[in-house]
Amino acid sequence: TAGITQAPTSQILAAGRSMTLRCTQDMRHNAMYWYRQDLGLGLRLIHYSNTAGTTGKGEVPDGYSVSRANTDDFPLTLASAVPSQTSVYFCASSGSRNGELFFGEGSRLTVL
Amino acid sequence: KQEVTQIPAALSVPEGENLVLNCSFTDSAIYNLQWFRQDPGKGLTSLLLIQSSQREQTSGRLNASLDKSSGRSTLYIAASQPGDSATYLCAPQTGANNLFFGTGTRLTVIP
Figure 1 (tube, rainbow over the protein chains, first blue to last red):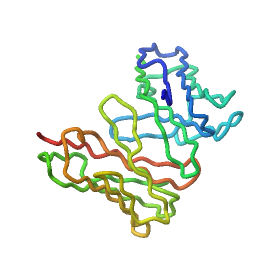
Figure 2: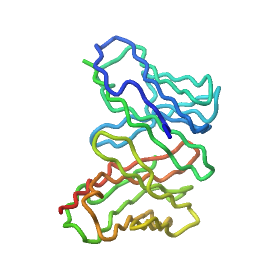
Figure 3: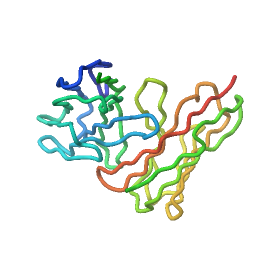
């Protein structure tokens, strides 16, 4: 079972460039999430989507946008990357009523 | 905002030892609490989920307890193995999209 697939695995990006991190799940989960993980800060929620067609802002949404055109895909876009967006990004999904979260393997982004 | 603290930040134990990882949180109005495992360079894997109405959950050698009123949870690992070496994170959930993570305990089990 693939679960959640993230791409790319890693990327180096020049400041000011745009970038879309892709996330696809095959579990038909309604809810999907984007987190960033930084040393010493833990995981912080960027954006979420409770169902296809809806999105919401998390704890650290500035500089990021998301869309949810269908159940399976939840891309995260950085319109104009800045060095502070250097991080490891995790996509997650939840479909059960108890709220259990399933994570992808992460995308490591370096903005120079 | 929910603040989550995990102590210790790092722990090394010899193989076979039983150990306890601690998690405390400031907002006791939680729906549930999840424990995750993260291997280096990998994503998070859910280990146990405790509903707010439950006191503990068990899976194999793992036992997680929850004391919601005092804002504490523990993860007990019995008979530790080198394969248990990883970072363990706890995450209490206070709303549909409000899951807050601690910074984790990095566990090393020495053969």
